[in-house]
Image 1 (tube, helix red, strand yellow):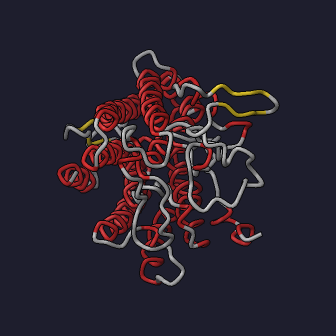
Image 2: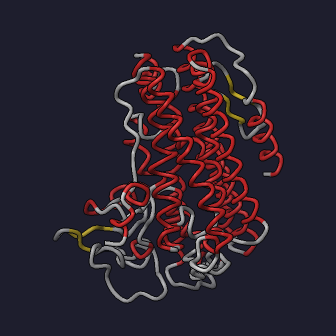
Length: 418
């Protein structure tokens, strides 16, 4: 992982140089699609490695095999989080993304939880516990869950139209591997024991079904990522949507950059949790990996603007970029946006470095942690600042139809507490 970080930093510094490509808007969008494809290919490759680790855990549950599966999951998040910059503006990605990265989730839909006080009033399935129950009722119909398969999990995802019923994707797998994080804003992640997967020495009950769920969820994630790779391949709809019409392709690219920077990351993923001082608002809350998710989200926006992506094998996909286009139109705007992007990635990197030194992200957002709060707020401020310059770049290119998603936490803070 350290080698990969150094490559990312090298790419970050390298792309602050002047434009190296003649400005060709179609070529910019071809490179944008190539970076998307590479990111999803890397994500698929690492989830396939996660599948190998999950199979080893199922065959021989132990602290070592559980830890190996956790490490494989953490590695798989590095390229995937960088692909989030392709959301919001691209319809095929937006339609697909909820299956693989939806959060937060009601853990009780999937498995046992501690401290249950009964049903969540907003979600009658918040204690359904699929792993413990071979059947249950939905809208008067009995669901046969006697065998936990990818098809069953697909049918349960966002059950009854409730977004918190997350049955599939990265975070369902994360919960199964780590279990609940019951530490609040103190240090520590989930502590699920390996014996929760050991049918011969089972803790937590239903170990055979827990293994079934973990394997099925991992298989389904592989299938979904295969779909993403196909979507950005030569004949894929995502690539076609971006490249068929140059103006609309640029709208998609800038919409993704702006919406991830502002409403999604600065707002929903960071400012909301900081305002509420609530660790349940962490993106990777079971594993305490939020610091990395935030960093690689920020790096993904940087990748899109600079037209460069460092792959997990160390190779680089690069070409004509949005930075080249803006530099050609107004070097001062290009420089300001480039500086803001670098500043926010560095600020997110500072969060990551502090977390890896011992202060986890949930500790940073605790009500009495002034230094941690300031660290997170600095990154939020950087993301907001870069969004303002993304908007300047959009105006410079003359694009209509770029709508940047907002967040009450940034735009109407009083509404958060109502």
